[in-house]
Amino acid sequence: MRLTGFSDLSIRVLLVAAANPDHLMTIDHTAELLDVSRAHLMKVVNTLTRAGFLKAFRGRSGGYTLANPPEDINLADVIIATEPDFAMVECMRDNNRCVLTKACKLPGVLSAALDAFQSVLRQYTLADIALSPKDIASLGFLVR
Image (cartoon, rainbow, N blue to C red; front, side):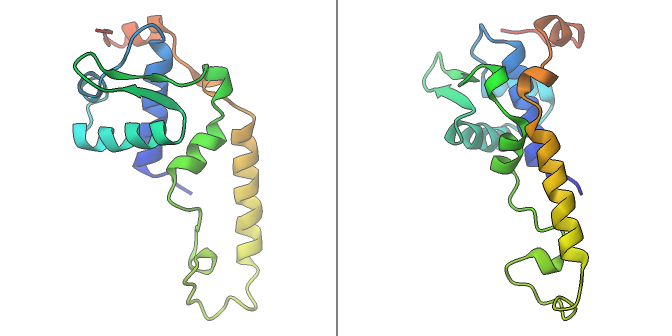
């Protein structure tokens, strides 16, 4: 299983915001820090804001920050909000066209694996993986 780049970038955005709790992060600065497309980053920040993980402020002095403390942001919730689906194989999709589905045992195995994956993620919050401001600075990232 592989998470989408969208989910990967979502986690990185949350990590940067968590490491800079006293500053509003901007799209431009974050795009520069993470070396990603500004347009793609805007979509990620909008999704995280709509899902309640970030608070966004518009205008000249705008930016974004965490909407809740890092210990209240569950990693499973972030992944569920940012992944388009968890249909790992054809038979798990709504428009399943696999002719083996009626007799196949693979969907049950993969569903159990997915449940285990989400169960492990449920045990962790952003606080568990957060970088400190010192960690961010050691990477050469300066907060503006």
